[in-house]
Length: 322
Image (tube, rainbow, N blue to C red; front, top):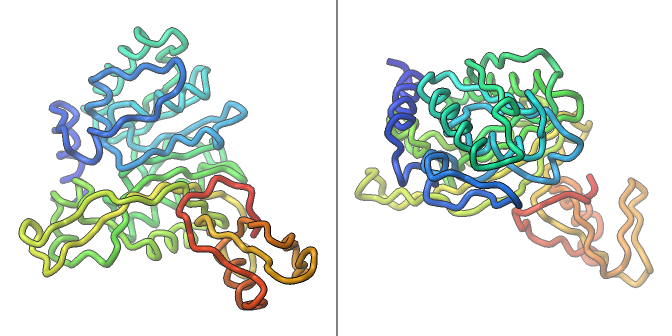
């Protein structure tokens, strides 16, 4: 049995018998005015963060959600795209599709604004998304892509890139590892399916996005997720997993490399009213300007005594400069 078959079998089990404690099912989902989440749907909230970012969902987008789970985030996306087929939810596991269909029917009874036609559930997987090229505004996945081996992760990211319109956005939430996960854990298919052993480091994870063609990556959140202890996982020292929420844009990669925003700012501290690097960056004296990590490095090297570069906050919501 391949690791993907193990994952499919595992999620067929938890679709029929929800497991409290798997991923972050005990966390509270995103609260939105007029949105009610049933206990059945909350029990199947198999994710490590959130992919629903209101700022990315203006103008009635078409959303493709990969790995429907219990339907919670599909419902949240439908809150912003209130039309038939506004959300397309794809899952290869029949039991999960059936559970999501039941949960969305309950949601229609509890939310007067929601109609089940707003979410179209389709059979499919991350490697063969059942939509045409450049046909959706948003692709989203929560705690799924970390299950994949690196080669399969690249395939999934390329497929997401294919179906996105130019300028479209890939919204992801996945565990990352604070150091490489040892081989004996990476080879444990059950732990991989449980989102505990397939995580990449932050550097590896973002490089995969760049390799797939995404020219801009924005980190929405980075926070502790799980601690793998020594006794349970055969480690010499505990290994911290973190949850990373990101938005990646289908835009061209600049000649000097992709732009990754992690919340860094550049502050001009010199004697002039402003600093102009003649490359599109104007820094008024004393005012923080959000910049991508690449630009932060360039500005810090250019004027190390007159430009202060602040640390990454790991929380960025736009407005910066490449």
